[in-house]
Image 1 (tube, protein in one colour):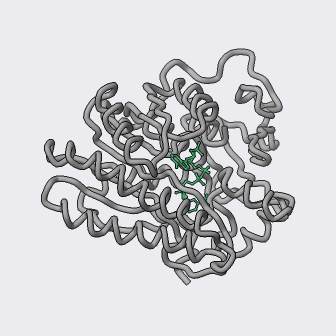
Image 2: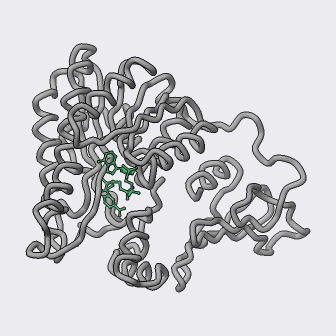
Length: 339
Ligand SMILES: NC(=O)c1ccc[n+]([C@@H]2O[C@H](COP(=O)([O-])OP(=O)(O)OC[C@H]3O[C@@H](n4cnc5c(N)ncnc54)[C@H](OP(=O)(O)O)[C@@H]3O)[C@@H](O)[C@H]2O)c1
């Protein structure tokens, strides 16, 4: 919902320059301005809360709507029928693996708001259905259930997308899992699971999508790697190896198709505030606020990314704005790999 509100409110609200801040309790806070009224927007526990922050010379009108912790309700709908958004992907077909949650969901939404038709894939059907329902507000969505690590499913993602939506212009290999454990504690089955999903999954999806792109001499692939591809850390040997492998795979495939009109790049996010992070806090038995405070302290920018910040970098790599980029690894990590 966070990214929904950020997206939906964007045309109306402008950040008041220099007022964004990270509150000590991990609440992300920014001051926003609509017309001549100032509001304070807090994001915590998955909810945006909007409140008047004063500074206006008369009481501010109600702002925002929905049932997600918004403190004031408007008398009339706040979103007009047309919301201006750049349409960089009008009519393009995009396949986002792992599109039912976190970065994948934010990416699917971002593509939809820019005019693309989007297929999302994931294993868990109720979650896939819920994601697809929430995305329908933004455009044409095709949910496809399946496991990226199975060749038959990966092939079906490509075929089903092409049959129902049209030739695939953009593939985002985002599906991934994170298991943090010292190497000696990893079981063989866990090793296989991480490698099968994070590395083999991207291989299979590229394998089945590339022939169509080669035939059309057009296409873009964005692989979601991680800053763990560059940074060693205890507990990250297997996950990091899967992402480092994905990075090298990206470069090799980029070179194989550099003259076919196909670009292949990787995005390397640092810490992103997604269910993956919340699951890790639960695993460690730490309250999310405390977990987040410790994690944010290690990041040069002092905070984790919102999924839609990563989505915007993915859209950049998928768009013509990055037309001379291929085989590149784009870091979006708040400065973590700059040290
Ligand atoms: N969150 C971070 O801090 C962070 C940082 C760097 C990189 N990344 C990378 O970003 C990507 C997305 O992470 P996230 O944080 O958004 O994770 P998330 O919220 O846990 O979402 C993962 C998505 O992948 C799907 N998925 C997992 N295994 C799959 C499989 N075998 N087949 C098909 N779909 C599968 C999940 O759905 P189902 O479980 O229903 O299949 C879900 O839709 C991952 O590749 C991750 O490694 C994340």
